[in-house]
Image 1 (cartoon, one colour):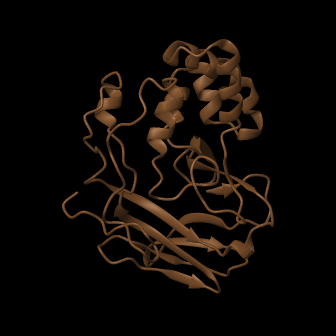
Image 2 (cartoon, one colour):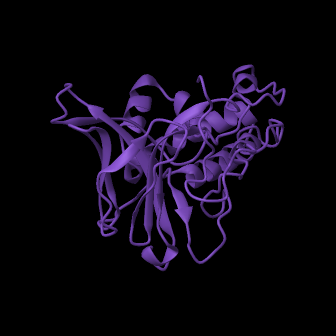
Length: 246
């Protein structure tokens, strides 16, 4: 995640070196050239009270994806139970954050011409499954959303509201209220309060999918029958070891 409108947040980039793939992070924490873990063992880099990990781990997301694609006919089959994900985990103390709520979002950049001299944004987000709303936009709107920034999200409120009317049968006034709560798409976190989705950040065991489904369907469907993964760790980097042969 990256804090919105912040000039002090860690800046993370990937780069090639003669020694192989490395992740370079430049921040006040002083972490640089953190190795990317390609195997079962998590290689962790520490700098002061910051810790950083990059590499393959067990995907912590849990959701009946096939049921969602089948008109929300859920069976409780977790599509992600045996999947791996190339992940980045950054841990900073709450004391390093502002003494008020921060707003977080992420984006994915790819080289625009293959040389790495310039980059183009190909994805962004903050809240799980909100991409479902984006897929309902027109091609032009979808491109503008994915390549844009939260500061410009107000333009998509009418389209989100229309999707909520169509999918969940929300009245227009209620659909507009929910759409305004969804946008701008950022994850709010106040370090003075316990993390709990959707009101304050998100933990790895929060059932963000059920929360979204209930809103999307206006309470007609409230759960997909899938729960948190059991391979989560109690210590950094918290994500379970990657599944072999995946």
